[in-house]
Image (tube, rainbow, N blue to C red; front, side, top):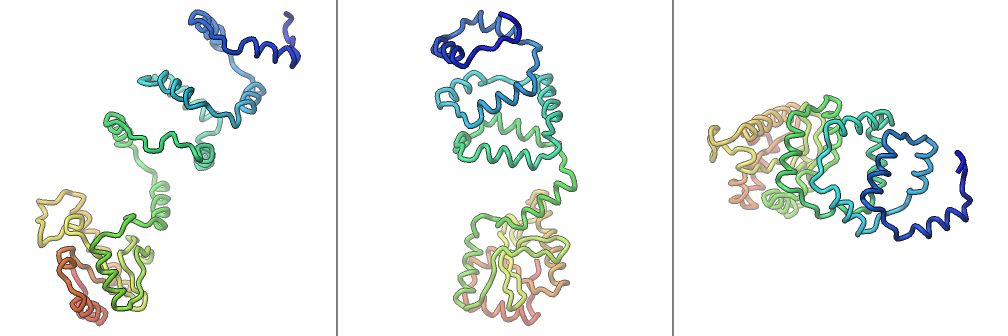
Length: 276
């Protein structure tokens, strides 16, 4: 057969039907693999392959088989390097946000990872991989910007709900998780009352390091820092003209509606700004 010869569409269809259901032996597969070594596909060929496979989906059985083939396989450093270089050539890292968007759209409706649980070994590997990875200042700023619109925590705590219910009984309008941006250490406060320019913080005994319960040596570095940032934010808020009332979990658990009302009244008069 001369080089450059092309089969007609009819012949191609006949060849496809004839090959349907046939399986190559391991030896044939090995020979085919060897014959393809070092061969580079032209851009036109790659484009055609993409067009042919666009919109196609593997059956669940095929996915299972692919999963079994790759199970336990680890990519060599050389293979990882090759893939990284290929992605760099294809402009993968030039616009990561655009690439992320493409992947997100491509995987929309894909339930492959739904309910999937990582093994302890996998989690450990992820942790090690991220341990010494430093985020750029630009990245950190982006994270901060995105967090402004997130409601954290996802559920209000029982102590927050108790204070919210007291405010409803007193017919006081309030906003939960309002982002306070006009201080250096901006954050989402627990409760903000616009009519009084009042911020109420419902501090859990453990996570905010209640000094009436825990000594410094009983708390790890993270919770000691949390206590310090709470003090700093209170100072910054008061400097900006906000009234701040911080209530500890142990206090909220015991407080009654009448006592809370008095605390609000005293707090707004400037006579009883709660200190940490």
